[in-house]
Image (cartoon, rainbow, N blue to C red; front, side, top):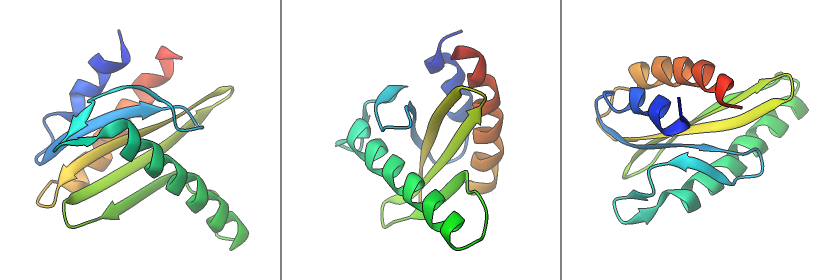
Amino acid sequence: MAISEKLKALEDVRGFVGAGVFTPSGEMLDGNAEISGLKMEVIGSLLNDVLLEAQEMTEKAGFGHSDFIQINSDMGMMLAKCTKVGDIHFHTVIFLKSDGNVAMAKMKLTSVCEALVEEF
């Protein structure tokens, strides 16, 4: 099954706008290309950088490794999860409208990430 097929499981989250999978260096592997006129590959790549910075900061602060971030903005919410299993390493993002179901998005994002491991 392709990455895009597994990402479809996120589409039934209330408020879903888009989702994508990125390499640890920020290259988009698959996902929705346009979000409200904005290019997902650009937004996702920048969000990828924020995730990496958050991981570095939590470790420097002695708070341990972070594998998840949530950013709220005027347009909605962005969630990003880092998945690393052995040599497999990728980042998955989901974008929601501001009234989206964050709890469901987090649960489904975790489940989709687990399913995506077999694609690498």
